[in-house]
Image (cartoon, rainbow, N blue to C red; front, top):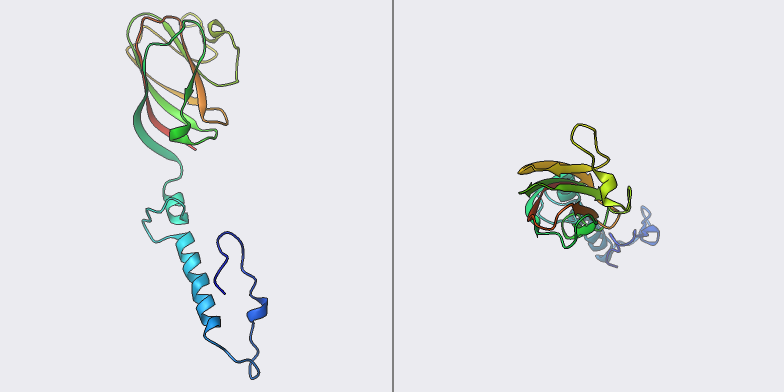
Amino acid sequence: MSTNFPTSLDNTDSQKVTDGSSVIVAALPNNLLDMVEALEAKVGVDGSAVATSHDYLLANKGAFADGDTVFNTKLTAANTWQDLDLSSYVGAKVALVYLEIKSGGTSWFAVKPKGYGSATFGNHYQAEGSGASACWVNNVKVVYLVCMTDASGVLQIGNSSTSNTITIKLVGHVK
């Protein structure tokens, strides 16, 4: 018998031995060794590079530094929301993302989790000093924003202009 772990738990009831009446054959300790090896693989060695091992997952939980440019163009339409799919970086799940946004020119830029807030872009920014319901930029060269993705790893971006190239870098994220 080889081990079923980690896809399912092993049932070892039929392999239990009794002092003075059980004959131990090689299969019993070999099966136990298979189980130990499966456990070691799941736990992982110190500094494991195996992304499914517990050692790797524990060492890499929390904030992940990315630094990848995820958007570098002009938006296709002004004053509308456009999906920005970050699932290849954060997975198809809710994640908190830290973004560096670079823009030139005078325009309003907003970021929001897909499906949240108003569908009307203009409802997500207000004049400076009066507050905003989402992250926004106006005539700023570089800004750092924190936003949450939806359950698919997608957020929405919008700009009041189509003449400005927007560069968005995913600085880091928390899963």
